[in-house]
Amino acid sequence: MPRCGRLRGDDGARRPVGSKRQGGRVAAKTAIPQLSWAQVRPAPVVLVSGTETVLADRAIRLLRDRLKEADPSLEVSDIDAADYAPGELVTFASPSLFGEPRLIRASNVEKASDAFILETLDYLAAPDEGAVLVLRHGGGVRGKKLLDELRSGRGDGVEIVCAELKRDSDKFDFARDEFRRAGKKITPPALRAVVSAFADDLAELASACQQLISDTAAEIDEKIVDSYYGGRVEVNSFAVADAAIAGRYGEALVTLRHALASGADPVPMVAAFASKVRTMAKLKGSRGADGQLASRFGLSPWQVKRAREELQGWDEKGLAVAVQALAAADAEVKGGGRDPVFALERLVRIVAAKGRQA
Image 1 (cartoon, rainbow, N blue to C red):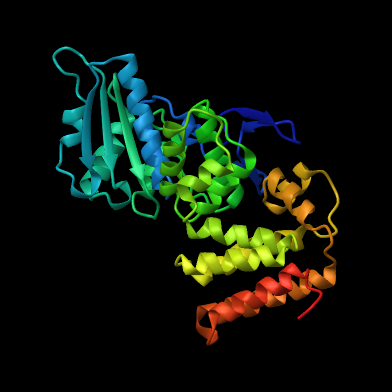
Image 2 (tube, rainbow, N blue to C red):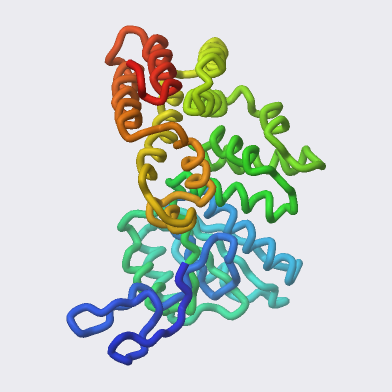
């Protein structure tokens, strides 16, 4: 995330980082630091923005812990901005008899009442010394004036950006950092397996990482992950796709049938194939270092490296056939066909043959 600072543009003028020229003038995006959840730090006002609840909750909890560590007498108060009683903010922010530090957490700012917005705007003009006001805004236009004022620099605040993690590479980085912060070693294949198992739910992914961290003493490998989460549909799905792409038809078919017998849904199984085959199709014929290609295609370097390895033996015609087979299978398992299992088995056969047979 960009930090508050200044740089020199082509015209020699110095302007805030993150700003751009519009019609000969400078339009600043924000005048306050924008940080990730792990970089949260005390400030008179801390805006925690974005739709990713897991990251937002972590940021607020981490801030509380740091303030508590600095002074155990910290007073913590909570305000619901949607159900705000006039005067609450001033009451909670005012120094107590013994001058303890205060943390005021305001939730639902995206649904804030008019009274909360007006009183918070007034508060930004002169935040109380010793108080940290946290504004949790989950997105939307409500409270925009308040956010604009804060981002302009009024209140001497910081913004913690907690945007949704949509890309697989972002989720992989999140999980990797979980283990790094805990000082726990995990092999790349094991990390990929964990991310694949919980790619649709960041809260579950975070919980799975913490369980592995707390329950295991040695380095975490694929066997350990499988012993915990081998029943997850996504793990089975990627196991089928991996075997098929590598040309191991028999293994892929057996794994497929075992997954289906265990209750796996055909839809995410086709999605696992699609994720891998489409990445391969993107990289086919591309040249450059793994890092360069990762940046170009919105992937992680490990995804590029693995896709390049999986492309061995594939040609463009075969990839085209596989992509067409994916589209057909996707339509059939989502209700367009009578037999989704047959559609999956046909997809496995085509992919295992690297698109060289129908």
